[in-house]
Length: 319
Ligand code: SF4
Ligand code: MG
Image 1 (spheres, rainbow, N blue to C red):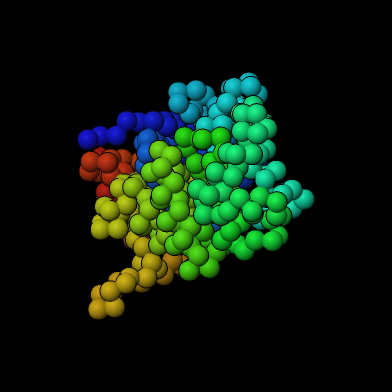
Image 2 (cartoon, protein in one colour; image 1 turned 45 degrees about the vertical axis):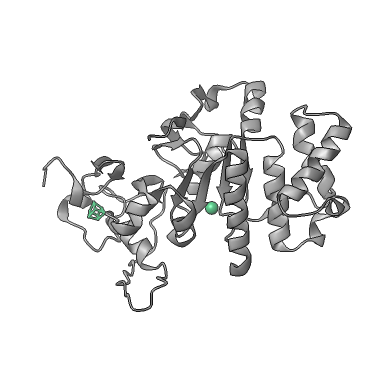
């Protein structure tokens, strides 16, 4: 059964220009209700900006961002507040996003106050319930962020994101700052919460390792563009784009008898302010052809629900 398209994110998102840096260029994808959509790429590829554009934490300079058919870029502050109730964010470093002078209770109550939810007494109860939900206790409510471990702080960050009962959560590398042993606890928590609260996730990550088990579909980004998009199953089985193959080749395989060839990417990622002509990956692509240097490959559906932008798979024969 096909899931309902719930969060159409269309029209090309153009990230805030920092100097002349075009962080995100013409990104277009849809997220389905109840799924976890992974956005993966090396740092600087524009994936965080894409996530933030959805919340207008970054002001897009051009293009438009839509959420539930509303164009976020043209909303009034009031409408934007309503959207922010439905779309919340979880950050990589929860410590940096938690006010050190506020108790956990204040931190968790704040979104309720902003959105006019509940009486003071009800809010206290909601905070205490939420602490239980994320695996903390109500006696944690009077403590300050520095009194918690990294994993606990991320639980607080998650609790804060959930206070307004959002529909969509954008999780920006939510476990990459945590110890490996803690990572799986947080991922399990996110998984449980998704079921319990009917959440949709956009999960931003810099490698394909973490994404594998939790994402239904994955979009791989390079220099501000999605270069491949498919179900994670298909992506791990049969990645098409040479960049995805390279990313996959550095994901450890649990089976020691099986060896995957490691693909070393030559050179650094080019500057987003001065992207290469043609295919923006051509300066590092092991399979680069002449045409790649001048002609930008189209993002095409190669097989059902499997999209790729690469001349190796291009349908229209212009080679
Ligand atoms: Fe490599 Fe060419 Fe495909 Fe780009 S279009 S990924 S350079 S083969
Ligand atoms: Mg990032």
